[in-house]
Image (cartoon, rainbow, N blue to C red; front, side, top):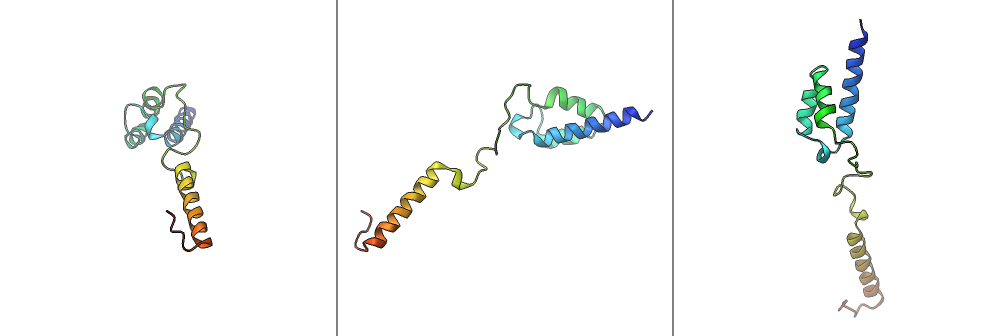
Length: 101
């Protein structure tokens, strides 16, 4: 008699964790906060998430952080500019008359 309740709870926990791990850009049909509220409906919510909310099977999930959320030192253009500034500073410290032009 308790088995259906345990299965419903396990399904709910699985779906909530799946929702939290899924990037917002891959969630279908509704925004993530709405899906979270919908998941609170016993059995119907998790079933709806599995059928209409989660990404289509085969959709690649990003392996790393979401683009644009990385540290600036991961950006090659940023690093290139830092190297250039450091080299200019070293050059000026060696020859104070050199204004970098």
